[in-house]
Every structure is written in structure tokens, then in C-alpha cells.
Amino acid sequence: MLGLRSIRLRLTLWYVLLLAIILAGFSAGIYLTLRHNLYANLDDSLQTRANDLMPLVSYDGARPTLAQDISTNSPDLGEQFARVYDASGRLTFDNSSEAGTVPVDTEALQQALAGKTSTRGARVDGDPFRVLVAPIEQEGRVTGALEVGRAADDVSDALRSLLLILGAAYPVTLALASLGGIFLASRALSPIDKLTRLARRISAEDLSQRLNLRLPDDEVGRLARTFDDMIARLDDAFRRQRQFTADASHELRTPLTAVKGEVEVALTRPREPDAYREVLQRVNEEADRLIRLVGSLLTLARADAGQIPVALEAIDVPDLVSAAVEQVRPAAQQRDIELVLAPGTPVTLRADEDLLLQLLLNLLDNAIKYTPSGGRVTAGWSTDGTRVELWVRDTGAGIAPEHLPHIFDRFYRADKARSRAEGGVGLGLSICRWIAEAHGGSISAESAPGQGATFTVRLPR
Ligand code: ADP
Image (cartoon, rainbow, N blue to C red; front, side, top):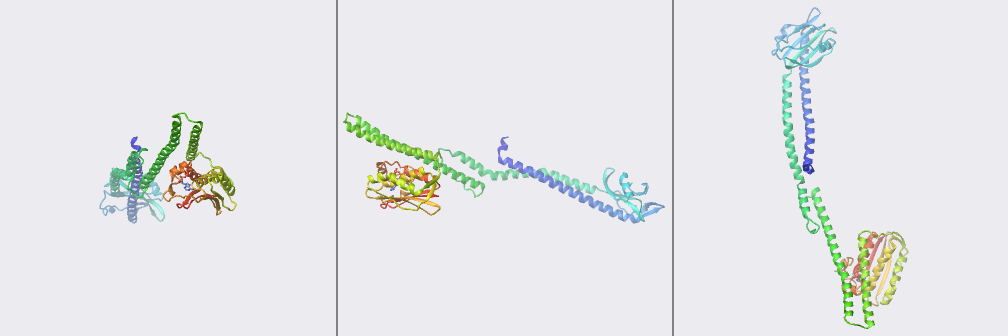
């Protein structure tokens, strides 16, 4: 049964089975057509012979007969014969003795006496003969019957030879076809075998391997390339997952190490209550950072798992942007940053209000964090009917071109020290991007160093 699990064998078996049926039908067709034609020819020659003999029929009273001398103009008497019957079915002429004993077919004779010509096959002393019986008519009346016969061994010999040839050719053709089928199937399937062997070598630990088969752009070639693409995507996903875990561990360790250091130093000797308060304040700050970090991690993990529901509802865009601006106004004032809400036309949008508010707060928060005192942060929106754009612009230090493509990556920070000092964990923009994409939109940043940055979120309405 193991063999039947190979496509090669099954293909070949199907192929041979179909071929066997087709070949059998074809052979039968040839044999039957030839047989029909050969017998039709023989019957025609019998009819001609009967037509030739009819004028030679003479009458003995009312009984028809043939002159004995027709025997002399028949060179091969063993091969053919003629017999004449009168109206009552009695023989009046018979030269069949050379051919052998020809049985009388009374039914065919009665038919002939009733005016109907018929042909039949007969055995004469074991040899095949073809026999025709035709009515003899005189002045519209049936006066007797003429029977002519001719040996059919040529025809039956030819048919037997054909049968032998077909019988021998059939198994030989099938055997050759099976070999050809196995060869073709093997050729067609050998790249798949190769693919299977190579694919087996690729494991989750080592996704860097590729099949890299140089195959033409056919079904198997496309399969191999699709497979390589899939491995590349898996490789990428695994790599990012590993990187993410490493980054997350690192980010978690930093505040914990800071806390441990502060506490250990504080405990080396007794201190004034103010000194303890200071230490506790710093520990508190680190705890806040940890809480933010773990919160962001949780958000991203749930976003990856598709566990954050996006509840679409009609939201008023001007209300949303001004609510976000008002929330960050105290922070902006504290840093002496001018916060501006750019005017825009009223527009509504189907989106998740909580998520969009979080997105805007992240962008505003960053803008304020990375803009020095005296700078300006502007938030606004615009629409072209099918899309709504939300944007946040600042006059801060901007982002260098080499960092720009990466700032939406998890844990990516253009200036690590600066970000840490500001309490950043490097996940804010990743979350923003997820929120934009979860709404079918996108987020992008434009910036030149020293000229501030503009973050734009494009959402379908
Ligand atoms: P972080 O917690 O470090 O702010 P984000 O994911 O929010 O993390 O941002 C990633 C990085 O992008 C930041 O570390 C910072 O270098 C850069 N960045 C984000 N917003 C701005 C901005 N408005 N101006 C300059 N740089 C920015």
C-alpha cells in the first residue's frame, strides 16, 4: 500500500488503465470494421456470381435447373459451388460435391422461395464458406431458388492474423506505455522530491536556509519560490520576535537595575529622612517607567494577537483633536511651549475614539518631549472627502534621515539618552502605527534635522 502513496505510481496506473481501455476500443473497432468490410466484399462477389448464373437457368418443364456445363467454366470447384432448387425445395442441380457436404439451410431456402435473397456463413467439412440463396423468377413468379457458395477461408485467415497481431501488440504496447508513464511521471515529479528533501532540512532553528532551486517558471518552480518566500517571511517574523524579546528584557532590566542601585546605596548607612524621600521619589519614577513600559508591551502583545477590539463609531474630528490638545496643554505650559490648534472644516470619521485619542496623545506627547522651550507644537486636520488627515507638527530638533525609516519600529529611539531622560520607552510610535493600520490607514513622518517634525495620520472616512 505504501507504493500507492506515490503520485508517480498512481499517475502511471491511471495512465495505463486509460490506455488499456482506449487501446481495447480501438482494436475492437479495427477488427469489427475489417470483418464487416471483408464479408461485405465476399457477399458482393456472391451476388455477382448469382447474377451471372441466373441467365443460365433453364427449365425442365416447370422445374428450373442449370446446364451441367457451368461446372467446366469454374476452375476452382473446391472453392465454390452452385445449387438449384425447384419451387417445392427439391434439388435439381448441385455441383458442391468437390467442395464437400454443404448442409441445406431450410429456413434460408423457404425465404428464397418466398422471394427474399439472404446470405449466411456455413461450415463445409470444417471449412468456412459464405452462402447466398436467391429466388429464381420467371414472369414475376418464383419458380425455384439458386444457391451459390464460396470458400471464406481467405477472410477468416486474414481476420485470425489480425486478431493475433492485435493480441500480441496489446500487452506489448501496454508494457511500453507503462515504462514511458513511469519515466514521464518520474521526470515531472523529481523536482518535487528534491523540494521535499531540501524542505526537510529547514528547521525552525535555522530559517536562514532557502531552497534557491533554479527551476523554470512552471507549477513546481512557482511552488519552490512560494515556499522560499514563505520561509523568508517566517524568518523575518522569528527574527523580529527574538529581537523584541531581547529588547523588552533589556528595557525592563534598566529601571530595575536603577532601583536596585538607589536602594543599595541608600542602605549602606543610616540617612536623614529627606535623603530617603529622595531615593523613594526616584524609585517611584522608575516604577512609573516600568508601569508605562509594561502597559505598552501589553498593548502591543494584545494588538499582535488581535485581541484589541476596534469599535468604529462616528466621531467629530475637530472635537477629537481639540480634546487631545487640551489634555497635553499643562505639559506644554510647563515646558513653555506654545500649543496651537490649527483651524479646519468640520468633518466626521468612523473610527475608534479611544484609540485615535491615544494616537494623538502619543504624537503630541512626543512633539512636546522633543521640542525645546520656546518652541511651538501645532495640531490640525484636513479632509479631501474620502480621507481624513490628522497631523502634529513641531519646531523641535527634528529627526535625521537615517533614523526616519525606523522610528516606527519597536524600541527604536533616535537618541536613546534623550528618550530615556524624557521617560520614553520607544514603543509609542509602534502603537501609533498599529492604531492607524487597524483603521485601514497609515502614518508617516517628515522631518529635516533642526527644522522640526511633522507626523501625519491618513485614515479612510
Ligand atoms: P519614545 O518613547 O522614545 O518617544 P517613540 O516610539 O514615541 O518612543 O518614538 C521613537 C523615536 O522617534 C524617539 O525616540 C525619537 O527619537 C523619535 N521621535 C519621535 N517623535 C519625535 C519628534 N516629534 N521629534 C523628534 N524625534 C521624534
